Length: 239
Ligand code: SAM
Image 1 (spheres, rainbow, N blue to C red):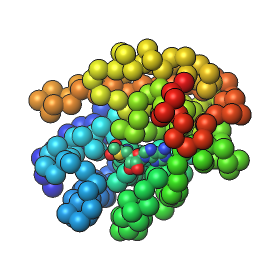
Image 2: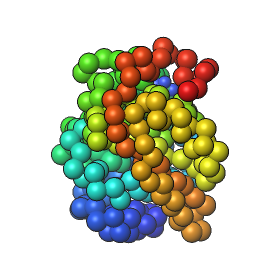
Image 3: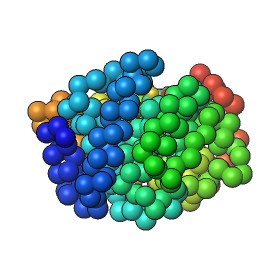
Image 4: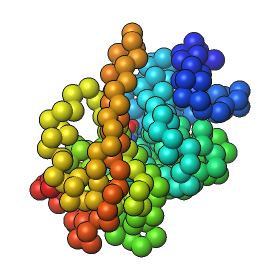
């Protein structure tokens, strides 16, 4: 196992995440599978293993600092791509049910194969757009937590994600370094959609070139029926 896995282990310990050798091996297998598939289908631009562990694995699990993560019964990941952050979280929370959604089926077919190889039974997949599924009774305001990374600006992402979250639940947005303007632009929309920014956590992992922020948005009231608007509208005409 490469050295960067020590950093993953350190993150587990720092965040009080329970793990064993089997968990670490599953992370390693997951990385190998994504890198193998990546030679045929473009899943990630990160091919260096150390960088992969840091930017995909450590980054994905940082939100475990929020106590609500360990208590969540259901978590949805919008725009999961090759499974980030959903699969790393599903590996550390085997008792939680995860739903991974993406609008590109080609990626989900690969994710399905990966889940089978990892023997991960707490994950289901949905092919579709957040704007459509956010109106379905079996998904709307049904999840304790919605996570999403690298999918859209916060202003747009809030309209994709907040409709899935139960009252008192959380929408967790993974963002880069400079988010002040993005946050300022999204405050009105978050309020309309029933959310309230609870906390912004900066994470700096020195010498690894990662300066990320996690934005925690609490669902404080129901999302009005008309949101999300039809597919494509949140992006064209952000709230
Ligand atoms: N979350 C992954 C990560 O951090 O590596 C993938 C990020 S990738 C840049 C963005 C993904 O979001 C793509 O796979 C895309 O198909 C998906 N996506 C974009 N808009 C979407 C929408 N409205 N509903 C569902 N998936 C969407």
